[in-house]
Image 1 (cartoon, rainbow, N blue to C red):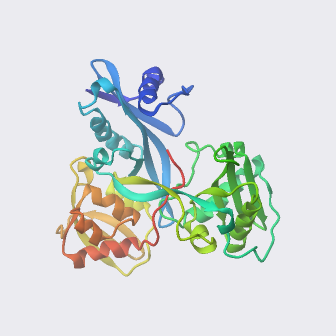
Image 2 (cartoon, rainbow, N blue to C red):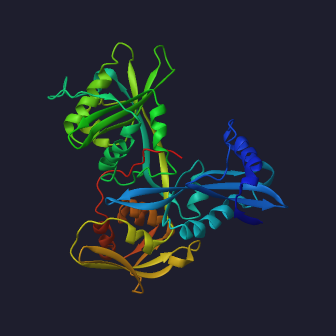
Image 3 (cartoon, one colour):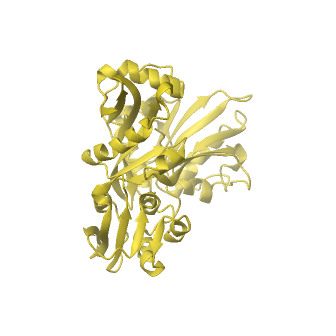
Length: 385
Protein backbone atom coordinates (compact mmCIF):
# COMPACT_ATOMS: atom_id res chain seq x y z
CA UNK A 1 0.00 0.00 0.00
CA UNK A 2 1.27 3.44 -0.96
CA UNK A 3 0.03 6.55 0.86
CA UNK A 4 0.68 10.08 -0.39
CA UNK A 5 -0.81 13.57 -0.24
CA UNK A 6 -3.55 13.93 -2.82
CA UNK A 7 -3.26 16.20 -5.83
CA UNK A 8 -5.73 17.75 -8.26
CA UNK A 9 -5.27 14.69 -10.51
CA UNK A 10 -7.01 12.60 -7.85
CA UNK A 11 -10.29 14.58 -8.02
CA UNK A 12 -12.30 12.06 -10.03
CA UNK A 13 -11.15 9.07 -7.95
CA UNK A 14 -11.80 10.86 -4.66
CA UNK A 15 -15.24 12.03 -5.76
CA UNK A 16 -16.13 8.47 -6.76
CA UNK A 17 -15.15 7.14 -3.34
CA UNK A 18 -17.01 9.85 -1.42
CA UNK A 19 -20.09 9.54 -3.64
CA UNK A 20 -20.26 5.85 -2.75
CA UNK A 21 -19.53 6.36 0.96
CA UNK A 22 -21.55 9.51 1.70
CA UNK A 23 -23.98 9.71 -1.23
CA UNK A 24 -22.28 12.93 -2.33
CA UNK A 25 -23.91 14.32 -5.46
CA UNK A 26 -22.05 17.59 -6.01
CA UNK A 27 -18.64 17.19 -7.63
CA UNK A 28 -16.28 19.88 -6.29
CA UNK A 29 -14.45 22.06 -8.76
CA UNK A 30 -11.17 21.58 -6.91
CA UNK A 31 -9.79 18.97 -4.55
CA UNK A 32 -6.80 20.93 -3.25
CA UNK A 33 -8.07 24.09 -1.55
CA UNK A 34 -6.66 26.67 0.87
CA UNK A 35 -6.99 25.44 4.45
CA UNK A 36 -7.42 21.83 3.43
CA UNK A 37 -5.13 18.97 2.48
CA UNK A 38 -5.42 15.21 2.52
CA UNK A 39 -4.10 11.76 1.77
CA UNK A 40 -4.93 8.93 -0.62
CA UNK A 41 -4.02 5.27 -0.29
CA UNK A 42 -3.18 3.34 -3.45
CA UNK A 43 -3.51 -0.40 -3.92
CA UNK A 44 -2.39 -2.01 -7.16
CA UNK A 45 -1.86 1.44 -8.61
CA UNK A 46 -5.43 2.63 -7.98
CA UNK A 47 -6.83 5.02 -5.35
CA UNK A 48 -8.44 2.79 -2.72
CA UNK A 49 -9.02 5.28 0.11
CA UNK A 50 -9.00 8.95 0.97
CA UNK A 51 -8.76 11.09 4.11
CA UNK A 52 -9.14 14.87 4.34
CA UNK A 53 -7.54 17.21 6.89
CA UNK A 54 -8.91 20.70 7.50
CA UNK A 55 -6.89 23.45 9.16
CA UNK A 56 -8.81 24.56 12.24
CA UNK A 57 -8.09 25.74 15.78
CA UNK A 58 -10.01 25.10 19.00
CA UNK A 59 -10.13 27.19 22.14
CA UNK A 60 -8.86 25.57 25.31
CA UNK A 61 -8.33 27.74 28.35
CA UNK A 62 -8.93 30.79 26.15
CA UNK A 63 -6.07 29.98 23.73
CA UNK A 64 -6.60 28.80 20.14
CA UNK A 65 -4.84 25.46 19.68
CA UNK A 66 -4.17 24.50 16.01
CA UNK A 67 -6.23 21.42 15.15
CA UNK A 68 -6.38 19.00 12.24
CA UNK A 69 -10.02 18.29 11.48
CA UNK A 70 -10.31 14.89 9.83
CA UNK A 71 -13.26 14.28 7.53
CA UNK A 72 -14.31 12.55 4.34
CA UNK A 73 -12.62 9.24 5.17
CA UNK A 74 -13.76 6.81 2.47
CA UNK A 75 -12.54 3.41 1.29
CA UNK A 76 -13.39 1.58 -1.93
CA UNK A 77 -15.85 -1.21 -1.21
CA UNK A 78 -13.69 -3.72 -3.07
CA UNK A 79 -10.71 -3.07 -0.76
CA UNK A 80 -12.42 -2.90 2.63
CA UNK A 81 -11.00 -5.19 5.27
CA UNK A 82 -7.42 -4.65 4.08
CA UNK A 83 -6.50 -1.96 6.61
CA UNK A 84 -6.78 1.01 4.26
CA UNK A 85 -8.54 3.35 6.71
CA UNK A 86 -6.21 2.40 9.55
CA UNK A 87 -3.16 3.03 7.37
CA UNK A 88 -4.51 6.45 6.35
CA UNK A 89 -5.01 7.42 10.00
CA UNK A 90 -1.50 6.26 10.91
CA UNK A 91 -0.07 8.32 8.07
CA UNK A 92 -2.16 11.37 8.99
CA UNK A 93 -0.58 11.67 12.47
CA UNK A 94 2.95 12.68 11.36
CA UNK A 95 1.44 14.84 8.58
CA UNK A 96 -0.60 16.83 11.10
CA UNK A 97 2.42 17.14 13.36
CA UNK A 98 4.47 18.50 10.44
CA UNK A 99 1.68 21.01 9.71
CA UNK A 100 1.82 22.30 13.30
CA UNK A 101 -1.46 20.69 14.41
CA UNK A 102 -0.81 19.19 17.86
CA UNK A 103 -4.41 18.00 18.28
CA UNK A 104 -6.93 16.40 15.91
CA UNK A 105 -10.73 16.17 15.94
CA UNK A 106 -13.19 14.09 13.95
CA UNK A 107 -16.85 13.10 13.94
CA UNK A 108 -16.86 9.30 13.94
CA UNK A 109 -19.58 7.06 12.56
CA UNK A 110 -17.46 4.03 13.53
CA UNK A 111 -15.79 4.96 16.87
CA UNK A 112 -13.94 1.64 17.22
CA UNK A 113 -11.75 2.36 14.19
CA UNK A 114 -10.60 5.69 15.61
CA UNK A 115 -10.24 4.51 19.20
CA UNK A 116 -7.68 1.98 18.07
CA UNK A 117 -5.65 4.92 16.74
CA UNK A 118 -5.94 7.07 19.89
CA UNK A 119 -9.02 9.24 19.29
CA UNK A 120 -11.66 9.36 22.03
CA UNK A 121 -14.95 11.18 22.65
CA UNK A 122 -14.21 14.61 24.07
CA UNK A 123 -17.16 16.92 23.43
CA UNK A 124 -20.57 17.61 21.90
CA UNK A 125 -22.18 19.21 18.87
CA UNK A 126 -25.87 19.81 19.62
CA UNK A 127 -29.14 21.08 18.19
CA UNK A 128 -32.30 21.47 20.26
CA UNK A 129 -35.92 21.98 19.28
CA UNK A 130 -37.63 24.66 21.38
CA UNK A 131 -41.33 25.59 21.48
CA UNK A 132 -41.89 29.26 20.73
CA UNK A 133 -43.33 29.89 24.20
CA UNK A 134 -40.18 28.53 25.90
CA UNK A 135 -37.60 30.85 24.40
CA UNK A 136 -37.48 33.28 27.32
CA UNK A 137 -37.80 33.08 31.07
CA UNK A 138 -39.10 36.67 31.04
CA UNK A 139 -41.59 38.21 28.60
CA UNK A 140 -39.10 40.74 27.23
CA UNK A 141 -35.65 42.19 27.91
CA UNK A 142 -35.34 45.25 30.11
CA UNK A 143 -33.61 47.13 27.31
CA UNK A 144 -34.95 46.98 23.74
CA UNK A 145 -32.06 47.13 21.28
CA UNK A 146 -32.36 48.00 17.60
CA UNK A 147 -31.07 45.28 15.28
CA UNK A 148 -30.34 45.54 11.58
CA UNK A 149 -29.43 43.20 8.70
CA UNK A 150 -25.73 42.41 8.42
CA UNK A 151 -23.64 43.47 5.45
CA UNK A 152 -20.20 42.73 4.10
CA UNK A 153 -18.73 45.53 6.22
CA UNK A 154 -19.87 43.64 9.36
CA UNK A 155 -17.94 40.43 8.70
CA UNK A 156 -14.90 41.31 10.80
CA UNK A 157 -17.08 42.54 13.68
CA UNK A 158 -19.21 39.36 13.43
CA UNK A 159 -16.12 37.20 13.93
CA UNK A 160 -14.87 39.41 16.76
CA UNK A 161 -18.25 39.08 18.50
CA UNK A 162 -18.19 35.30 18.04
CA UNK A 163 -14.62 35.08 19.34
CA UNK A 164 -15.44 37.06 22.47
CA UNK A 165 -17.83 34.29 23.46
CA UNK A 166 -16.16 31.27 21.83
CA UNK A 167 -12.81 31.71 23.56
CA UNK A 168 -14.58 31.19 26.91
CA UNK A 169 -15.98 27.76 25.89
CA UNK A 170 -13.56 24.85 25.62
CA UNK A 171 -13.67 23.16 22.23
CA UNK A 172 -15.13 25.98 20.15
CA UNK A 173 -13.47 26.62 16.79
CA UNK A 174 -11.88 30.01 16.18
CA UNK A 175 -13.34 30.02 12.62
CA UNK A 176 -10.14 31.12 11.02
CA UNK A 177 -9.86 31.67 7.28
CA UNK A 178 -9.14 30.22 4.79
CA UNK A 179 -10.72 26.96 5.99
CA UNK A 180 -13.87 28.84 7.02
CA UNK A 181 -15.08 31.48 4.55
CA UNK A 182 -16.57 34.26 6.66
CA UNK A 183 -18.45 35.77 3.70
CA UNK A 184 -20.64 32.67 3.28
CA UNK A 185 -22.65 33.65 6.35
CA UNK A 186 -24.25 36.44 4.30
CA UNK A 187 -25.85 33.78 2.05
CA UNK A 188 -28.15 32.75 4.92
CA UNK A 189 -31.80 33.85 5.02
CA UNK A 190 -31.48 35.78 8.27
CA UNK A 191 -28.35 37.55 9.52
CA UNK A 192 -29.08 40.33 12.00
CA UNK A 193 -26.71 42.26 14.24
CA UNK A 194 -27.00 44.27 17.43
CA UNK A 195 -24.60 47.24 17.18
CA UNK A 196 -22.77 48.40 20.30
CA UNK A 197 -20.47 51.30 21.16
CA UNK A 198 -17.33 49.29 20.31
CA UNK A 199 -18.40 46.75 17.72
CA UNK A 200 -21.29 44.30 17.97
CA UNK A 201 -23.06 43.22 21.16
CA UNK A 202 -24.61 40.25 19.42
CA UNK A 203 -25.82 38.67 16.21
CA UNK A 204 -28.17 36.00 14.90
CA UNK A 205 -27.92 33.73 11.84
CA UNK A 206 -30.73 31.47 10.66
CA UNK A 207 -32.10 29.60 7.69
CA UNK A 208 -35.76 29.03 6.78
CA UNK A 209 -36.25 25.39 5.84
CA UNK A 210 -39.19 23.14 4.91
CA UNK A 211 -40.60 20.70 7.45
CA UNK A 212 -43.96 20.17 9.12
CA UNK A 213 -46.99 22.29 8.33
CA UNK A 214 -45.30 25.69 8.59
CA UNK A 215 -41.67 24.87 7.94
CA UNK A 216 -38.79 25.38 10.32
CA UNK A 217 -36.37 28.09 11.33
CA UNK A 218 -32.87 26.72 11.97
CA UNK A 219 -30.86 29.12 14.11
CA UNK A 220 -27.16 28.49 13.54
CA UNK A 221 -25.63 31.19 15.73
CA UNK A 222 -27.22 33.11 18.59
CA UNK A 223 -24.31 35.06 20.05
CA UNK A 224 -24.61 37.79 22.66
CA UNK A 225 -21.73 39.20 24.66
CA UNK A 226 -23.98 40.20 27.59
CA UNK A 227 -27.36 39.27 29.02
CA UNK A 228 -29.30 42.11 27.37
CA UNK A 229 -27.96 41.18 23.96
CA UNK A 230 -28.93 37.54 24.42
CA UNK A 231 -32.39 38.42 25.70
CA UNK A 232 -32.98 40.73 22.74
CA UNK A 233 -31.98 38.03 20.29
CA UNK A 234 -34.25 35.50 21.98
CA UNK A 235 -37.07 38.04 21.95
CA UNK A 236 -36.58 38.57 18.22
CA UNK A 237 -37.10 34.86 17.68
CA UNK A 238 -40.37 35.02 19.58
CA UNK A 239 -41.64 37.34 16.86
CA UNK A 240 -42.02 34.20 14.72
CA UNK A 241 -44.81 32.96 17.02
CA UNK A 242 -47.89 32.26 14.89
CA UNK A 243 -45.66 31.48 11.93
CA UNK A 244 -43.75 28.66 13.59
CA UNK A 245 -44.52 26.25 16.40
CA UNK A 246 -40.85 25.77 17.30
CA UNK A 247 -37.32 26.60 16.25
CA UNK A 248 -34.19 24.48 15.93
CA UNK A 249 -31.31 26.09 17.81
CA UNK A 250 -27.68 25.08 17.39
CA UNK A 251 -25.94 25.34 20.73
CA UNK A 252 -23.08 27.81 20.63
CA UNK A 253 -23.23 29.30 24.12
CA UNK A 254 -24.92 26.74 26.44
CA UNK A 255 -25.73 29.51 28.93
CA UNK A 256 -28.25 30.96 26.47
CA UNK A 257 -30.44 27.90 26.71
CA UNK A 258 -29.71 26.78 30.25
CA UNK A 259 -29.83 30.12 32.08
CA UNK A 260 -32.09 32.34 29.97
CA UNK A 261 -34.52 30.03 28.20
CA UNK A 262 -37.63 28.56 29.83
CA UNK A 263 -36.57 25.10 28.75
CA UNK A 264 -39.20 22.43 29.41
CA UNK A 265 -38.31 19.31 31.36
CA UNK A 266 -38.34 17.28 28.15
CA UNK A 267 -37.33 18.56 24.75
CA UNK A 268 -35.80 17.12 21.59
CA UNK A 269 -32.02 17.15 21.29
CA UNK A 270 -29.88 16.09 18.32
CA UNK A 271 -26.38 15.29 19.54
CA UNK A 272 -23.19 14.38 17.71
CA UNK A 273 -20.11 13.51 19.71
CA UNK A 274 -16.69 14.48 18.42
CA UNK A 275 -13.47 12.67 19.15
CA UNK A 276 -10.16 14.28 20.03
CA UNK A 277 -6.63 12.97 19.74
CA UNK A 278 -3.50 14.61 21.08
CA UNK A 279 -1.02 14.36 18.21
CA UNK A 280 1.95 15.97 19.97
CA UNK A 281 1.66 16.29 23.76
CA UNK A 282 4.44 18.85 24.43
CA UNK A 283 3.21 21.11 21.61
CA UNK A 284 -0.45 20.74 22.65
CA UNK A 285 0.34 21.64 26.26
CA UNK A 286 2.42 24.63 25.14
CA UNK A 287 -0.43 25.94 22.95
CA UNK A 288 -3.27 25.53 25.45
CA UNK A 289 -4.34 28.07 28.02
CA UNK A 290 -4.19 26.88 31.63
CA UNK A 291 -5.62 28.10 34.96
CA UNK A 292 -3.12 29.89 37.19
CA UNK A 293 -2.17 27.37 39.87
CA UNK A 294 0.37 26.98 42.59
CA UNK A 295 3.53 25.34 41.29
CA UNK A 296 2.96 21.61 40.74
CA UNK A 297 4.22 18.69 38.68
CA UNK A 298 3.08 15.20 37.70
CA UNK A 299 5.16 12.41 36.20
CA UNK A 300 3.61 10.57 33.27
CA UNK A 301 4.22 7.50 31.17
CA UNK A 302 2.47 7.93 27.80
CA UNK A 303 1.52 4.73 26.00
CA UNK A 304 1.10 5.58 22.31
CA UNK A 305 2.37 3.19 19.67
CA UNK A 306 1.00 5.31 16.81
CA UNK A 307 2.68 8.59 17.90
CA UNK A 308 6.05 7.37 19.20
CA UNK A 309 7.49 10.91 19.26
CA UNK A 310 5.63 11.63 22.50
CA UNK A 311 5.46 8.13 23.97
CA UNK A 312 7.45 7.33 27.11
CA UNK A 313 8.31 9.26 30.26
CA UNK A 314 7.36 12.92 30.67
CA UNK A 315 6.81 15.41 33.44
CA UNK A 316 4.11 18.07 33.21
CA UNK A 317 5.25 21.11 35.17
CA UNK A 318 3.14 24.09 36.24
CA UNK A 319 5.45 26.90 37.29
CA UNK A 320 5.01 30.66 37.56
CA UNK A 321 1.69 30.58 35.71
CA UNK A 322 2.98 28.54 32.75
CA UNK A 323 2.64 24.80 31.99
CA UNK A 324 5.17 22.76 30.02
CA UNK A 325 6.12 19.16 29.27
CA UNK A 326 9.65 17.96 30.00
CA UNK A 327 11.17 14.56 29.16
CA UNK A 328 11.91 12.18 32.02
CA UNK A 329 10.34 11.58 35.40
CA UNK A 330 9.20 8.44 37.19
CA UNK A 331 6.08 7.60 35.16
CA UNK A 332 3.95 7.59 38.32
CA UNK A 333 0.77 8.01 36.24
CA UNK A 334 0.33 5.86 33.13
CA UNK A 335 -1.88 7.37 30.42
CA UNK A 336 -2.95 5.55 27.28
CA UNK A 337 -3.25 7.51 24.03
CA UNK A 338 -7.06 7.47 24.19
CA UNK A 339 -6.96 9.17 27.60
CA UNK A 340 -5.13 12.25 26.35
CA UNK A 341 -8.01 13.69 24.30
CA UNK A 342 -10.77 13.68 26.95
CA UNK A 343 -8.27 14.83 29.60
CA UNK A 344 -7.00 17.69 27.41
CA UNK A 345 -10.53 18.89 26.57
CA UNK A 346 -11.78 18.50 30.16
CA UNK A 347 -14.50 16.07 29.07
CA UNK A 348 -13.44 13.39 31.59
CA UNK A 349 -11.59 13.51 34.88
CA UNK A 350 -8.94 11.06 35.98
CA UNK A 351 -11.43 8.99 37.98
CA UNK A 352 -13.47 8.28 34.85
CA UNK A 353 -10.34 7.56 32.81
CA UNK A 354 -9.20 5.10 35.49
CA UNK A 355 -12.56 3.30 35.46
CA UNK A 356 -12.30 3.04 31.66
CA UNK A 357 -8.90 1.39 31.93
CA UNK A 358 -7.10 4.32 30.30
CA UNK A 359 -5.18 5.57 33.34
CA UNK A 360 -3.18 3.81 36.02
CA UNK A 361 -1.17 5.01 39.00
CA UNK A 362 -1.53 6.73 42.35
CA UNK A 363 -4.77 8.79 42.50
CA UNK A 364 -2.97 11.43 44.56
CA UNK A 365 -0.57 12.02 41.67
CA UNK A 366 -3.29 11.83 39.02
CA UNK A 367 -5.42 14.50 40.68
CA UNK A 368 -2.87 17.11 39.59
CA UNK A 369 -4.03 16.47 36.01
CA UNK A 370 -7.58 17.44 37.00
CA UNK A 371 -6.36 20.58 38.73
CA UNK A 372 -4.36 21.57 35.66
CA UNK A 373 -7.32 21.43 33.27
CA UNK A 374 -9.71 23.14 35.69
CA UNK A 375 -12.56 22.54 33.23
CA UNK A 376 -16.15 23.61 33.78
CA UNK A 377 -18.95 22.70 31.42
CA UNK A 378 -19.06 20.31 28.49
CA UNK A 379 -16.54 20.95 25.68
CA UNK A 380 -18.46 21.99 22.56
CA UNK A 381 -18.10 22.60 18.87
CA UNK A 382 -20.61 24.61 16.85
CA UNK A 383 -19.12 23.63 13.49
CA UNK A 384 -19.50 20.32 11.68
CA UNK A 385 -16.96 18.97 9.17
